[in-house]
Length: 73
Image (cartoon, rainbow, N blue to C red; front, side, top):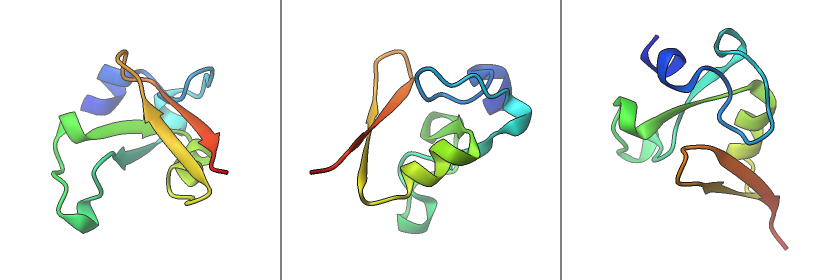
């Protein structure tokens, strides 16, 4: 709920998926000791959530808390 209120939807730049269509994502993975707090979380739609976990893409977090994805070369 808190992520939905803060983010309003997918935090990927240019994406307009509403909060109800998004997944919670940990910037610092919980499986590697990351915290499960609001500061370490963001909303991503299913497409962008897959990219966040795809090693062929780099995720850049911008100052406005949005993210963008670029294919690694």
